[in-house]
Image (cartoon, rainbow over all chains, first blue to last red; front, side, top):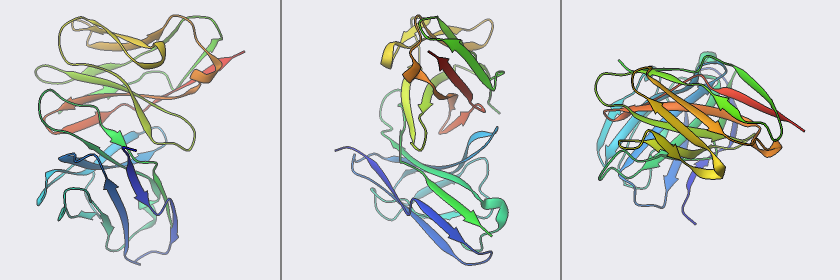
Length: 114
Length: 111
């Protein structure tokens, strides 16, 4: 089944404790992206990657890091989480060839930072 | 910079009635517009997109959207709402390599 998977689905952590949220897709998509969803603000793009070893900042990159060493994986790293990073996080992927494509979203990771 | 506005936080409609969820956008150049739906505890699912061509775009689950360049709008519509359509709907504009979302509109369909 074609899908985007994220782990963990739920995470409660404390301020300053480094964490990584994994994202993997099995559709051979070049483009991958991370979003955070907050009430009333919709989804805001954190980082995106056009292909392996190519990453760029989105609208809200502060406090986050990403890497794209393999085409299928795009982990999101919070080196020193803070309470304002409590949010619902989504990973997404899409092909890049041709006209703009719809993105395929993972199930989400709910992060709470205390 | 591009932006998307969804002016209604919530839309209430009776089952069987037509529904409209509004979206306006601001972008330089040609807009590439999308609608996504989010059911409780799920990720977003693609409904439809406008890239070019016919201003009326048909998508999944009987939804359609009308692109209006002069009004910079891309309203989502369905002729007859179902209770199962109740969900959170997001409009988005693709510009360059980024996707910008509106704040979302919760659709409540009452039996």
